[in-house]
Image (tube, rainbow, N blue to C red):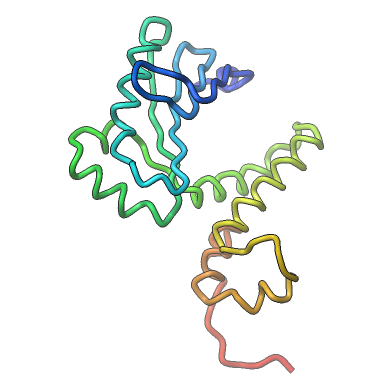
Length: 177
């Protein structure tokens, strides 16, 4: 898709279809659309496929291509795989992304957006930080020193991956002096 297709899409929230509600539908300038279901703690993942079908029925007259995406917490990925095994066609039709994927993509895209306004970059950094903070289980309460004590090695590995430093986190038994 050419870059100009991404400029000023039309975004619809909570789109009502026949017997369901889609979280987001983005209409792109090239006559395609993206349907996104945001599943934050929603255990009913199987309804994603019927919702995708209803959204297609609603938009197929005006849009020529579609994509369907479900945005999941990392802890929901196993349940998604199980539901895909029970719902034929869901895995091939609906692309799954985790908030971890979103955080990594956003963090890696931030340095390349020098043409964006300072307001956009500040909001993007804040959003990215909020997503990463949630992924690491670090709520806004408490002091940052307390957070450091709570982080285990697995959390440090996740933080390193979010920052693109995956190969640099190693166990060390040496103490700093």
